[in-house]
Every structure is written in C-alpha cells, then in structure tokens.
Length: 476
Image (cartoon, rainbow, N blue to C red; front, side, top):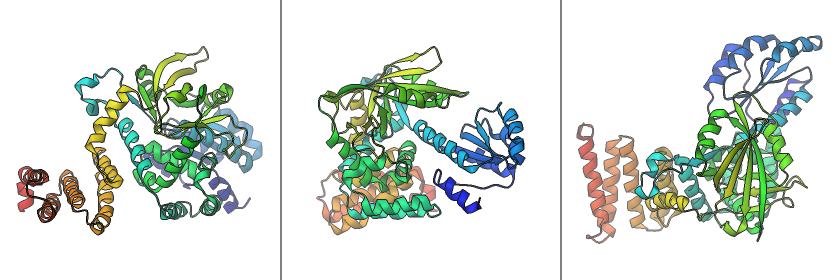
C-alpha cells in the first residue's frame, strides 16, 4: 500500500504523527511527552529493542507491532504476550487502524479531567486556596465568564483558521473543518459534539489541560453547546445514569477514593449512558496493570439543576442515532457519596448531582469571584489568569483590551488595566516595566478621576512596593 495512503488512514484517527528511524530517538520522545497519550506502531525488526524500554511509561497507551513477514506473526505474538500494552501483531494496516480507532476512542473517554474538593477542610476558617486543588475553583469561574461573554461571527472564523493551521496535513479532518465552516449553527452544537472529529478532541483536551488559549478560541462553541443543553434540559427528570472509565491507580486513589463525602468537578462535557451495560463495557475495555476500572453511578435530579449546570437527553440531537445518552455540561459538580469495590475488581463510584446550591461550592467560588469582579468579561478572565499564575496569558488579554477600552473612553477601566499589567510585571520581576505601567495608570487617574478616589492609594502603594522590593534593579 502507498505510504501516503497509510499516513492518511492513520491521520483520520490521530492528527499528530512522529516518525523515527532509530529506537533511541523514539524512546527520548516518549519520555519527553507530558499530558498526552501516545500510540506506537513499531516494525517487527525494532519491536524487541523498543517495547521493553518504553512499555512502563505512563504516557504510553498502546503498541501495535507491524510484521512484514506474515509467517513470523505467531512468533511475535508469543513474546509480546508479556506486555499488556501491545494490542496485537499485524500484517495488514486496515485491522491495525480499526483497533487503533477503538483504542483512541476509549482512551479519549478515559483521559478526561476532574478536580476534587477536600470535605475535611473547615471552610469557615478560610484557607481554601492553600489547601484545595486550584483547577476545581478556576473552572467554575472560567465557565461563568465564557457564558456571560457576547460573541460575534468573526470569533467562529478565527477558530476555523486556527483549526486549519493545526490540521493542515490532515485531509480527512480538513474536509470536516470546511463542512463545519459552511454548515455549523448553534442549534446543531450537540450534533457536532457527539461526532468523532477535531471539535470533540480539541475541546476536551483544552478543558482537561485548562489550555485557556484554545478555550478562549472555542468560546463561541462552548457557549452554544452549554445553552443548547439548557434549552433541551428536561423538567421533572430524575434518573440514574452511568459512565465507565479506566484510570491510573494513583489518580483513582488521590482524586476519588480519598475524597468520599467531598466534591468532584468534571472538567469536560460528560456523556453518560442510561444503559449500565454500555458504561460497563467502556470501563472493562482496557483493564490492565496499574489501572482501575471505574463505573460512575450518577443520580441526576432536574429539581437541583441550574443555568450553570444543565444536562439533557441528546438521543434525538446526536450524530449517532439511537444512543441513549445524557450529556452534562462541563464543570458540573457532584458529591462523592461512596466508593465500592466489586468482586471482579471494578470500582463503583456513587455520585450525586449538586447543582449550584452546594454550600461548600458556594463558599469556594464566591471567594475568588470577589477577587476578579468587573463589568468587563475580558478583564474578569484576565484577573482569573493572574489568580491561576498564568501571567503571560493575563498580559495577552489585557493588551488586547487596551485599544478597545481607549476607544470607548472608559478611563477608570483603562487605569485598572495598566495597574494590573504593572502587577504582572512585578510578578515577572520586570520592575522597570512595572513602574512604567503603574505610572501610566496613575496619570490616567489624575486626568480623569476625582482626587479623593481610593484608587490613588492603590496605585501609590504599588509604586512603593516596586521600589521597596527591588531598588537595586530599578536604579541600575
């Protein structure tokens, strides 16, 4: 089969492909990858020297041995049985691709993000931010800001151009991107999410890793999908739904088992099934060493859902017809009621949907919400990036805002932006830039704000902090 044909077949399954001639280069690459899952196709000639060196790397998901000599397949099948990540030995690319497509689908289902909240903390005494997993709090507020944002048609076009750059060598996905450009409408957001294509994979990766750059590029679609779930949500709906996943033993112990009685936030749009067997099949699909098969049993109740936490039956809106699925919006929060182990080693995690009324959740989100309050959603997002320690991204958002705010003659807002840029440069220890921005903020206040305003004290205090913390650097 032609080499380019094989590459196109593989790119219809995974977009990013690296090719190595030497096993050492491949090993180095595997060990360098973080926050991704790797699928390796290796020739029978290199298989023995490569597999043993990479098999136990946690980022490696699956290995496929391609054997050019059909008479040697049985021989290779015998020695590869000791390696749980080796899916099979192949002499034909089509069955290999079929297996890889299934494996990537299950991996995508497993490789989602969630964050937990410690039930033992005394929230009345504060201290939340030093003791809780930050992503739990941040995702709730990112979601809030994105839903409040107004979007325009050019937001969609900017995202499409970004996708074209990412998939420029992938003819399969490129054609779907063109289709998305021509045919996408907000009323079809669920249909597009349930289609196995670039959109689903890019969105869930961005939400899992909290990649704010891509999340921001996809803001129009995230809002459309969330709002369609809200419009399709069911009144008087109380039902048990299920989701099956496989996760590392470490993740299970640290993010689920130890948090019984606490809260868990799902960082992704969560597809669940009314059919328990379907979820069990996913959970058991890839039982292997150092991993746990988990079945989520989720109690949904429409009486406690809110605009922030919608869920809906998507059977009639799905790309795949007759799938009995309930889709729950991203960032939805559940209480972990109990964790139970079955005789076959599988775990059942009992979750109760909390909506937005959970007292612990309110305390957590309100505390940060006060820190980032603003009438401008972009400023709120930039302030949140500062809270998250993502100063480069906060700087990008503020610089984008400067020209818009100046045109609108919102001088108090403009002064705030320059002040926060000064704080960013202080964190980066770029003290001269920090002083310049604090000075600009102060000059704007002097020109447009009454002298007694408390904002002056904040600006002078910040200028003093720069001089106090690094006089030597500023004067150099």
